[in-house]
Length: 501
Image (cartoon, rainbow, N blue to C red):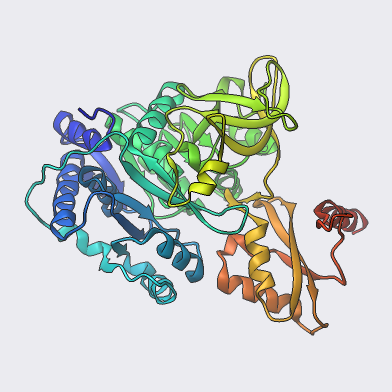
């Protein structure tokens, strides 16, 4: 008997509290009974249309109730939801479609043009339907049995090689990460949860919202984040808890109405994706809002570390301790052995929340683990109390607005531009986004306007958050004796310019 599958969550909740409001979307309420019924019809329709256990169902949509119903339909029908990122460029989406080979893609009207361009560039040709029409699909009830270890979510992340990798998360992964989150900083049936994180991120599902539907809470589901509207919703809907990245809370704090907005209902705000800057943490605490800081990654579904609000000031900058059911260690950078006590090393993770592996990529899956531990690629310090602080990265990666950016991916796009000999991208601090990229490029010959042309080239091939803030044309890139690009020297050059300017 399968006990951990997410189809049980919505069926059990609809039976226990059918009239409770599950989703409040643009002031339209969906009850738990309605959500269960909609997902039941969708599951039957997908199976009746010929989809089989393990098939991928791709989506290109903003957050909306139909997307939630589709996730639970996939959970009931043994299918895998592949939520595609609408921030990506068509070429990036085409690569993910070709890799995942979905049987079906459901597209929201607002993203129809992006879907046209992505499918036009892809080799695969999945059946395409309007997501808005899915609510009208109907079919007989089905009796397919779903197992705990069946995959449920396929979420793509950029890789250090520049090629996207699909992290495959099972029902059990989602169950344990939500249970651990609940025990650490839980959601109650009386909570009003604000859902603004995009559902093409694992955090859009497994940080608060799925837990809310498990517990019988109400989710105020927003299509995307808008700071002014979010403040108004917190006040009007009496939102009690929410999740965001540091940029989310920065934009809210910068809104003219921030000081006057009634935040008294907001008992808990969760932040992830990057450390919360201390001045911003103080701004929110002055407004009486408790901040829970954490650390996670897609491959861990994503919850790994959590710093509860009672320690937020005393341990500013810390990511906290492991969630329940999550084991965390530090791996010596030289020997690979696990370290004891206060130490610095690569953060490694294991537990039932850790993913099943990368989609159709055995080599990358094998490289992601050592001795049963997931290698995060992040360097952390552990103090005498057992709290962790992320202090660096082994991977050449930076975080811009909560999104991981791998310079290798951007460099590959730049290298493909006419006249480019080679390129290197480094991260620089940015008050708004945390970090942004600056590209150094060597050209075959000097061309007027080359910098803007290269930015436009990146903009046509990459998501906007991956496009460098600036391009610098240089005669050559600094290299070590072994020919490796010395990115530290490029960063130092930028730092000297800031000091001089």
